[in-house]
Length: 265
Image 1 (cartoon, one colour):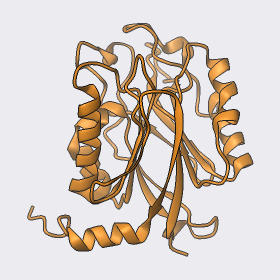
Image 2: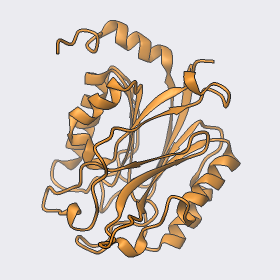
Image 3: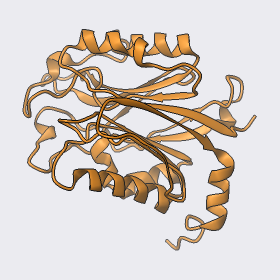
């Protein structure tokens, strides 16, 4: 059975500095009755002050955070995407900034582009993931993974690199999921909204982007359709927004705007 609709929920909540407390909130914050739940970047433990070493807060993909994400996903009958700091087996102990996926599909994506921009130096405290675009298939049902929704994973600063979004689409992505902790500042909400809509329009894909809220971050989690229409948008404060993605809307957008087919390489 090919997927026809996908109900998504974006949990725009702040991550604190205590991993146990963040982990304990996953259950209460995860809604039922949806196919995909997206939490922000580093929900397991916020970055803290710029330059703070993060190795002490990193966990394995079978650690307490990922285990709780899996438990809640199975309890709700959904799939959850959430950000964490992942242990790296090297002497430096510099962790990956990782999206963990649990539920009807199990996967992980390690952030490729580190936020060395706007006065920040993420590469001082985090390791870059391999340059390997990550597309997962969310089954239309448990027995039909081959016909499920194809989801490309990106994290925050990755959004500013259109070649990554295009690489994901070239691997079949129909939906881009973008957890973020988009730092607040001049023009930042405008950049966030503009880039999200651009990635949707230029690739004729849905974009599902969940950020941490103000005051440190921008909020404005969004769901955008393949023609750039905003289906749902949060404000700056903590909230949960929902939307329904339609495969027919995707197909219609690609008929109206066949830019992928019209490329000349």
